[in-house]
Length: 113
Length: 113
Image (cartoon, rainbow over all chains, first blue to last red; front, side, top):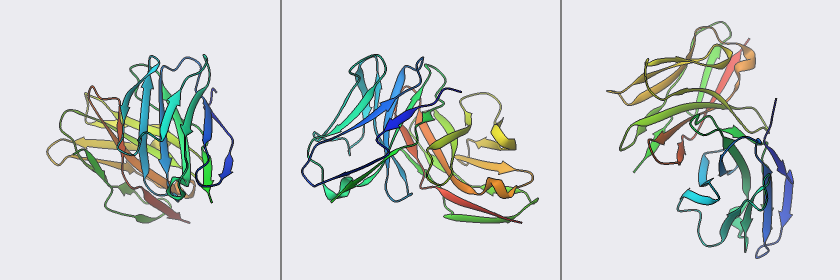
């Protein structure tokens, strides 16, 4: 069965550094999402992406965040200057057009020190 | 503001007994409702959805949920719980025509043998 993959599984970075989290969505999916989850708690929507542009973003998704689909397979989340409070699990998800059933990747644990 | 509430942090049930995990929502517009399950150190896994039609929807692993428009609820149910159902359950809502999902805070289900 096709899966969403994410790399790395764990990223440790120092405050102020830039990080790029990578995701490979399922190949025929057209909608892509990033979420974060702090300490196994609430899952928070960050951004949705369709047709090579952002369709929705949350209040969390400020100028420090950006997303990109640099080629036909990868979907990346960049945090320009990390803060301690960015420490969380970041999940990528994708879905088919019209299905609304999101397939989630295993997540990247980001630790900012 | 759109929101999802899961009033119980934890639900305990004995194996073989029926289980209910509660979810209420507040949206301005027609809701699309979802349930996801998360096992430890894993991404979220889709269980079921309500888009339109029959208020009772059936999903994976014997789970079902009932959409109640007047009570703005979408409770998850299963007639007979299994120990392997023990996990974290998330309710989510998407407003029609907006590519943005709101998740509840999660309910930990403990099924004891």
